[in-house]
Image 1 (cartoon, rainbow, N blue to C red):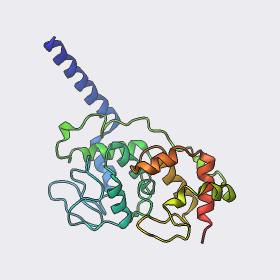
Image 2 (image 1 turned 90 degrees about the horizontal axis):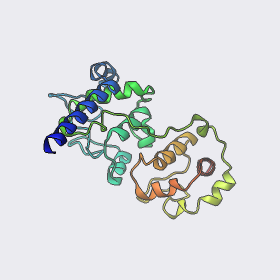
Image 3 (image 1 turned 135 degrees about the vertical axis):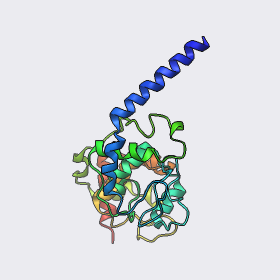
Image 4 (image 1 turned 90 degrees about the vertical axis):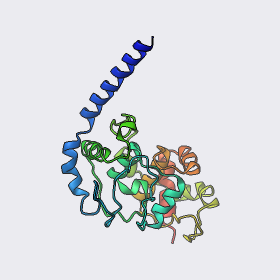
Length: 232
């Protein structure tokens, strides 16, 4: 039985490794990473530049590279418990503001899923213990729910948003002041909607926001975006 179990484990490991190779091409990821290299370094001699170095990024809590000055919003994401896994890195690379609304990372994102898979497969080489990282993370891509582009074009009813806003304003200040909790007034519509759906899909880590967003429909999120976006 032990021999059979060992054989099965070996077979599964080989199959997972083969699947990983078909999803993320690390060699092609070298080329994709050139889009990142103006700000980030990776490898033996990597140092912090405009952005932090990316050695050992998988499994690392966001905002924790030593001697790098992070934005307040990245510090909040770190305090909320954001950890760089395949899923969170993939979402961040596709649209940085989906994870950290006011990130200083001035990058439009990698819109092609294969580009993201390839660069993540490349970065995996520089993890502390790459052999210990399950093949489903970071190399294999999970079937995360996608945000339908039509959701971003929903025209929300600000009056309905005001009706719904009481739960939000138990923490966030309607006058836009920052009292340890980030303001949400005057947000661009798309930023608000993307952030709420990131919580709803459990890409952002804050447990209360996950719970609140999880109860909201697409129309209700659009209504809240319209209301808070119109507050002065």
